[in-house]
Picture 1 (cartoon, each protein chain N blue to C red):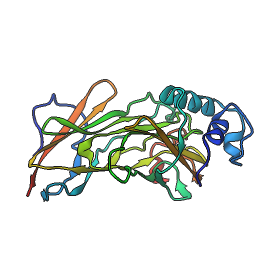
Picture 2: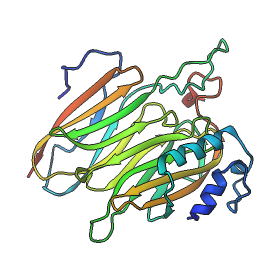
Picture 3: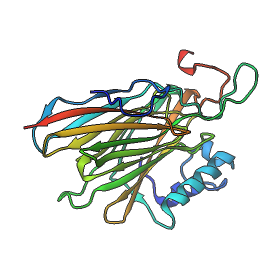
Picture 4: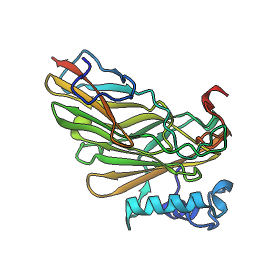
Length: 160
Length: 116
């Protein structure tokens, strides 16, 4: 489900009631404040617009310590506008930043797949900057059964 | 072909998947995996002590010394960081994958690809 920038910023805001209905994001928390700061530091005063930016994550994750994610920012039809970078955030993690990926003309396409940590159920946010200076964003809700962010007292969360 | 020129470190030997050859301009898929605990700094050990942060924070891929793909990696990337991404190459050359850990330890691997 794509949302507007206003919804995103509201949801990441300090306890602002958002239209997203994402309970985890409604309460003011250190994590969401950190996420808001991280997003602001990255985009400045830019106004990201929804998509086209595909963010594939299974809606249910049994183990939050390693959740597969697949991103693709399609270039414009004539190939002149391409993604320069994508920032991925897990706003309700103790450390919301996941990674910032940079693409080049040698990349051929702005695609990346990786595995991320999700401490709890939340909406994962991706923000892309395009070569024409515009921003795109999207987000996906993920329900996490067992949180994993290296915060539980378990040496090897993957073994649990 | 593993690169032996870097300073030896305790980092694991990386694993990559690169096609041996491809057509010029073809979109190819590259995969890279490094075994690493990626200690986030938020984990507590059995004695109640915080385990300090120690992660792979950079991943850089070059083709004949030109930047192809790079990542600034943060603690919410899972352990044993894995990346799958693409390349579109017009001539044969050498791909080089470099991982950098907090504190500066590095490991890398190179692979030649033939473009037909």
